[in-house]
Length: 278
Image 1 (cartoon, one colour):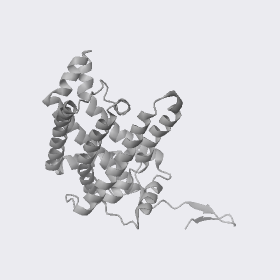
Image 2 (cartoon, one colour):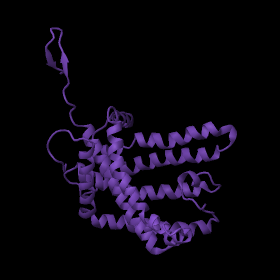
Image 3 (cartoon, helix red, strand yellow):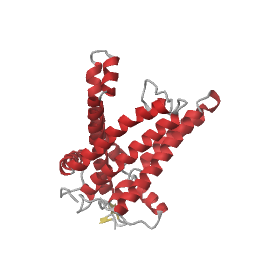
Image 4 (cartoon, helix red, strand yellow):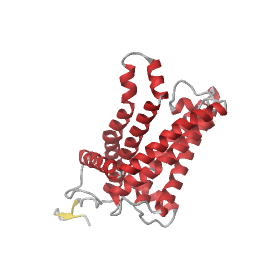
């Protein structure tokens, strides 16, 4: 565990630890980062070819909400699933770098379990969005909204499963793992949201920075040309790795914070004296 000593950190402290950890992962695990970026680059080149072979028409907007309501939504769901599974080892490595003494190793056991959890969460989220896309009719509008809510809320609440798996924390069964992960949010929702906002938020903006720069010239064609170019795909893949690492490290520190002993709250005794709450 690479951590600073002292009292329980606040939101800014956790965010600062996250950014230090992100830099440490990017420098300390540079070969792995390069491999994952290269695989993401390859997938970004392969899927357009597969689209042509399958006669799939990609909409102008690449928003997940748009992709999952078009007739060929199954293809784009498969694409997102593949990208997520490729990103999983990088997220695991980033969290082990923070949480375990041998953070530079990727043992087969945690890697397999991490992959299985990632696949389950991705399939649930993408499946719910796919069903929401099928329900985009006036009669089923409420059903579609509920499915969209489940597609994001449930995977979000399960995020703290992944640091536990990365740290090889013991759990009697899947139900116990889920119960512990959900329990970590108790009393920490606003804190963890603040940490993610200060870490994943800037990393996401950084990923969108090239497009924002090109859009300053009011040239939609330039943005599309850049995205379709080898340079654009390489830049996007590299910045995606930064986003993955920042998110994984932020979750690792949130998980670590949730497991810290809570401060003892004094309570008032019947005689009016303040005693420690054991």
